[in-house]
Every structure is written in C-alpha cells, then in structure tokens.
Picture 1 (spheres, each protein chain N blue to C red):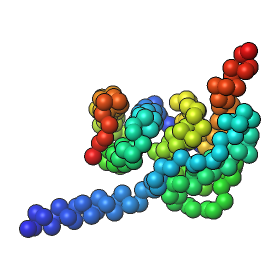
Picture 2 (picture 1 turned 45 degrees about the vertical axis):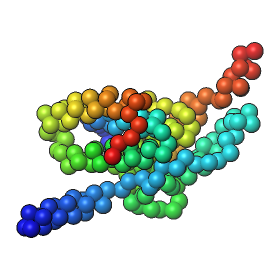
Picture 3 (picture 1 turned 120 degrees about the vertical axis):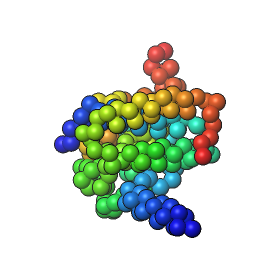
Length: 78
Length: 133
C-alpha cells in the first residue's frame, strides 16, 4: 500500500477541499471550476516529492487561492 | 514568427504531457431513483451499483470493463492519487457523505469505499425525525 508523506497528505487534502468547493458552485459553471482545479494541479504534477520548499510554497499559495475562490460571491472561473 | 513557432511547439508538448493524464469525463451525478427517498435504507448492492456507475463516468486508463468490490483504484483502474480523490469527491456528492482525511488517504479498493459510505450514510431527514419521535 502506498503510504503518503505528510506533505503529500496536505496536497491531497487541499485537492479534495478544492473539488468540494467546486461542487458548491452553480451547476452550469461547475465544470469550469473542475477543469481549472485539474489544470492548476497538473501544472505541478512533475515536481519531485523531495522538493519540499517548492511543494510547501505551492500548498501555501494554493490554500490562499482556495480561501479566496470558495466564496459564494465568486461564481465562475475562466 | 520564430517566437510563435516555439510557443506553439511548447504548448503542444504541454498538451501531449497532459493528454497522458487520465481525467474524469464530465461529472454527471448519476440519476438513480434514490431508494432513501422512499424511506428504505441504502442497501450494499445499491451502493455498489451507484459507485460503479460513478466510476464509469471517469476515463479509466486500464478500462477493464469489470469493476467489482475488489477492484483497486491504482492497480486495476490505473488512477493516481489525484484521480481517485476526484472519484472520492464525486462519490461524496452522489451519496451525500464526507470522506475524512484519514480514510481518503488510506482507501484502496472499491469495496472499502462502499463500506465507508454504508457506515457514514445518514438517511434522509424524514427517517431521522421518525426515529426521534
């Protein structure tokens, strides 16, 4: 069984939070959000798991963006 | 012009790497008649059937037609950790449950997912009210 490191768990948790937030968006825009989340996470897919400082930085910025975008006032993303 | 060319080349290379990644097709919640709305509890068979239909909305790399309770997300379906977390969140929507972090990180097979849904599924409010009264 694959055991995740603490940092990997944080990434996965953020990913789930983002997707959950996407499901709270209006149904006709939901796919935009999901595509956006996929593309943002895919950009960093090839970062080595040992590159702690980069991953930590990305988690920090990701969390900030998640907090900002999850607001119900923000309805769509392009 | 050369600049444009390199940009195009780069973006096509990027597209190629992305294409290798499996991703869900459109997220369409499965419109099964919810048994819970008739007051009857969710059966294991029902959860399995609905879970499998949700999983089939994803483009699976190893598209083995048969998905059963022993199917492993990573080994049998060729999903990576992000992909199967996609599936878990889609299942959360389907069954109105929430996978806690520990479970979500440890789940491996379809059967474990089904068991977790059965364990945490809360019947509709009506049923709860009746029980309370």
